[in-house]
Length: 592
Image 1 (cartoon, one colour):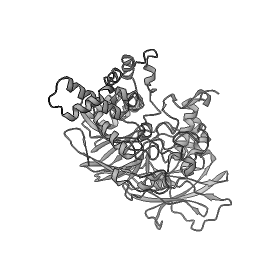
Image 2: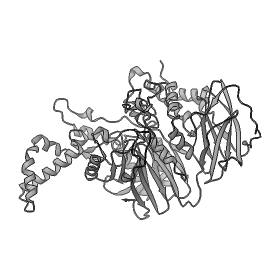
Image 3: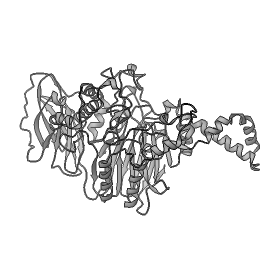
Image 4: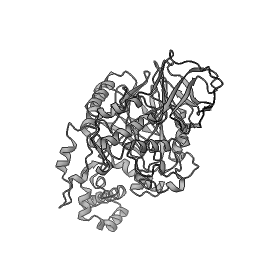
């Protein structure tokens, strides 16, 4: 099969992407059809409604109609009240198989900072009602945002979405990627899927446009997901699993040659994403570019980035630098490759766009919505190379320090400390001492730690412009709070990372059987990693951000289970961080 170029695919899919209906106050009108006739076939709104990509004067509305018909007519309505007693705008359109029966209405010339309600109608059948809100302009006193990442359908119930949907005053929901996962039945995190009735469809790994469409359709039948979409407009970016695991510009870890052409698979995945997500293309026919700007008046400048598809160089792998004979890491070659100045995660065009938007903005706060951790997660080499666990390293390092003090004749050592050392001295073998002396290394080369030169460029841009920077991250399935510094230690900003909706985190990979053992490892990590202020390695949840001129409050909220049909918010593990505005220096957070 000939390889599809980006231009070939854009031309082939332009009809689908261009099917968004644009409505202004001149083209929209009030409905005069109060007594509609039923359609001659069954119709249903099985996948809910959504709004997204709000601006100060526009809102994108979305739904999908289920019907066995070549083309389905339907009406949309926008109102200032839930009862639709004052229908402000309405219009008619059609949908068909070419867009997988999805519908997008770009309603423009709306009022800034205003709450609207919307619905769709096909014949006599109404969709659920959704709530949308345009962005505010001018002086803004507060913005409230819910932040999500990593929602794997077979891993558990989407209680996190349901909990956030109960909040009645959200300005928007931010989704940082991995909205769907590509694996087949029995794949990643599917061990309880059958018992929960959440086995994925199709049963195979998704590769084609039809596969990706079917997977989105299954996800969007989830009631909790429908609730959060109906509660507030979505501002979303993709990560890797919307295509396949560890994707980069020209390939992915989870794409093999016998699965066909990668570019064709990627473009099919992105087309399905644009069909099923309430996202506005930055240009007609372009479903590959998603970095874009959202301005909440003079308070907040939100820049949504693509760290995955459009520009990312291939990830480095530690295994590529291990000498097969000695088993030792070739640190010199690894460091040389890692620190190349040309190494990029954004691509030159997106990086320049980001620098321009950061420098030009006069908003109080600058916020980057993106996928992977930006904070320096440097772990002891033995931990990064998975030769010692976090807790084992912390314990052995403390023992080695105790042995060093004893050897130096430290008179302050207690009898208990000397007895402990005597009982455990044999654990400090030559092999263990070698592991303890390995230098600190990046925890995750798929994150910004794998692209340090470009991270330094961005942080230098922020420092030079004296901006108040907040970076949002997902991807890891755990919660984090980091201080962001230049390589020389200069403070620049703060990173706030959300846990996953359902995907398992470090609690599974490093075998933390309960929250008590997780708490001990979290504490060890916070001591080992410079700049790390907070970690939650066990719980599923979301972040609630409340932005005001003087501070940003981040509340990490968690549910007690994703494996049972009933849930509660887990108050004992909730955490809050506050970032104070400081015009004279970089932002820093305090935990409460």
